[in-house]
Image (cartoon, rainbow, N blue to C red; front, side, top):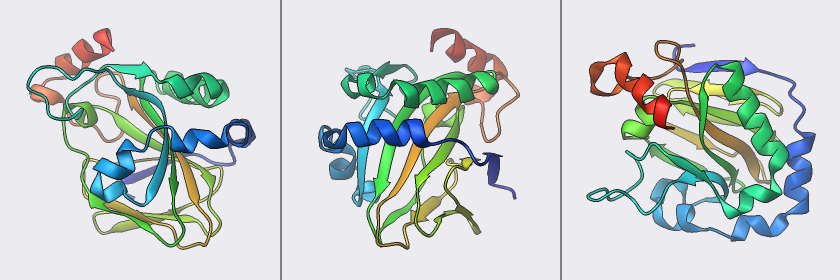
Length: 204
């Protein structure tokens, strides 16, 4: 596979699922992603770590914002965040943004590219929490089907999309990790230098 890496399988997702079951209203707290990002209009989202705001002067979106913050909902998901941090530690990197995403039944996340300096130097991970028939994800002309308990990384800097072929929501935990210089799976150094990645890591 050129665009995907299966990092782990058979992970215990029960702690995350238990936290989700204890906070059903969390899906309705922040609907900005599905309202404002067209390719995500068929999703529901729980933000756990999000870009620091207000945005820097001149920035129209958060694509170039490196710093992340805990959201108000994060307090209800300590085990979920602990899992994200454990993966980041294992990779020798720093945790960035984190969000729980439910893709509605028989719907898709439309083809898109994650643009901006924030994404260029970070690896994106997906942990499958609920997927009745598997989670097809396509990057370019390559497709994988992710299954419950699997942790994947893929190149979100290329055109990608996802599909839920079942009649139940497909739920993923999605988070980003800033890897040590030269050790990322699918990263592209900003400004053409590994030193810049190290500089960002020092301030993340």
